[in-house]
Image (cartoon, rainbow, N blue to C red; front, top):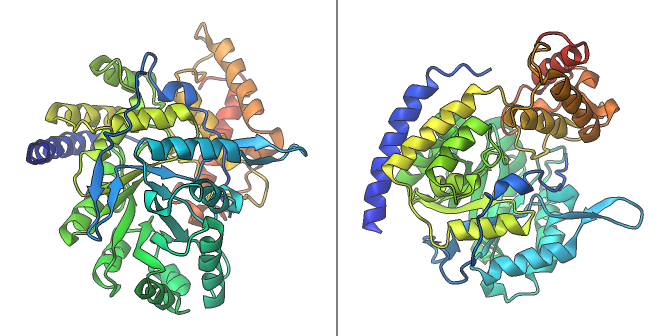
Amino acid sequence: MKEHKDGCDAGRRAFLKRLGAGAAVVASSSLVGCKDSSAKVKYVAEGVGGDVPKDKMEYRKHPCGDSVSLLGYGMMRLPMKKDDSGADVIDQERVNELVDYAIEHGVNYFDTAPVYCRGKSEQATGIALSRHPRNKYFIATKLSNMRGNNTLEFGKEMFNNSLKELQVDYIDYLLLHNLGNLDAYKKRFIDNGLLDYLLEQKKKGVIRNLGWSFHGSKEFFDYMLDEAGVKWDFIQIQMNYVDWERGNPTAEYMYKRLTEKGIPVVIMEPLLGGSLATMNYQAMALLKERAPEASVASWAFRFVGSFDNVLTALSGMTYMEHLQDNIRTYSPLRWLSDEEFALLSDVARRKMSFRNVDCTDCKYCMPCPYGLDIPSIFKHYNRCLNEGTMPQNELDEDYREQRRAFLIGLDRTVPRMRQADKCVGCRECEPHCPQKIKIAREMRRIDEFVQTVKGDGLI
């Protein structure tokens, strides 16, 4: 382990130096649903395969004594199917299959929330996990009182319903969900006495570890660490090799502060909503040249795993291929070298130079009061940009084909009445976006682009 740490520290320094210099010159331009990812094919590199180890998973030790798998299962994007009425519902049989496979291959941390999958994730997670001995898994869920009702009674009801849906009598890791600013934190947890109630539950053993997931400012992050008056057992932050040197606060800043405090770190969005598995071809080519046999996604997981205060890295694995690839990556983890950290800094700079919308498809912005399918609009735009199929200039010989593919693909992905031109700029969605995307502005930009393409003008 000492060899890993020394190499990791040097690699981090190289990564910080190179990414910091590159980033300076880059000119960048209510219930959560479940949906199958469109990244199935590109997530795993062609030719990647072989046995999936059952006994080589990397584990990290929590101060409470838990030995936690470095790969954590995020239960936000579960497989779906159509029921008899044609409605989308969770495919419980496939969820059971994935959970069984994960546990068999060493995964023991499962993260869910009351609002995931339109309120059905906890139930599906409970059904799948209850078929296994309770000591085979750790459950992480959240107090997701983010909209509307901030009463103590509502918070208690939500917490007790989580226990019921998950079919357990204690929660291993409970998070205050999606902390964004001090005023909201006080309304949701302090003024109503809900945090005191949760601390009581922890004393009783109903909650084993208490923490929070974060999407706020540097000042609020420091407040929660230094002035909240609570000894937190773990913290969940967004961290990946693109966010390491951007944001307020940066992933680097949060990780460093948590490490100094001795607080274990849980990682969300190691793939930045899947965008680090399906990047533009120039960035992907750098990684494929270095390791043709490795998936593009595995680089992102190796990055976060190469920080020794990371307890687990969450992945929303809709497909068996995703699960198998991630298990291989962490069974065992191959720590990044200095040279590989430097390579990822180059890839990060290239990605940031593209005008992608940094949407992670969390769907916290939904539902839109005017019916827009905000995540799907961003997904189609980003996909065409990353794949190099965006129509650029009508004088290009392949312009007409790209124009047709872009417009037909948009209509197939997003119904006409739910596209960007229907945005009225109300900005009701923006306070709920963890990525702080200026959604109304991006909708206007994308609509202008679409209208230009429809008119066959220059882009």
